[in-house]
Length: 134
Image (cartoon, rainbow, N blue to C red; front, side, top):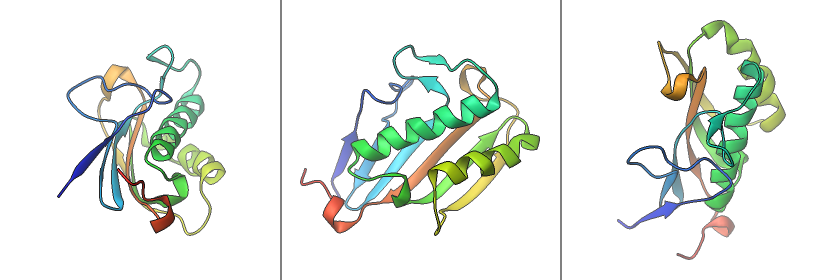
C-alpha cells in the first residue's frame, strides 16, 4: 500500500504531527479542519456561521489539492461545541453540497483546538479521471 501526502498552502498548515490529507489509491482521508484562515493561521473573526464557512473552505482546498472536490466526499464528520448550531451546519452545508449528500455524523464535544467552535474531517473517493498519477 502506497500512501501519498496531500499538501496545499490554500488550507491551514498542520499544527501537529499529521498531514492535511493522505491518499491511498482512490481514497483520500482529510484531517480535521478548524476555522483557521490559511494566511494568518488564526481563527476567522465572526460568528459560528463564519467559522463553519471557513471550515468548508479549508476542506474544499484540501479536496482540490488531492485532485477532487467536495462532491467526492463520501463521509463527513462534524464536531461542535454547541449542538444548537446544528441547523446552521445544515444551512451552510447546503451551499457546498448537492444530492447525493455524503454520509455524516455530528458530534457534540466539550472543546476543540484553538478554542474553535467547529471542526470537520472527511473521507473522499476520487473519480478515476481525478486519480493523480503520483
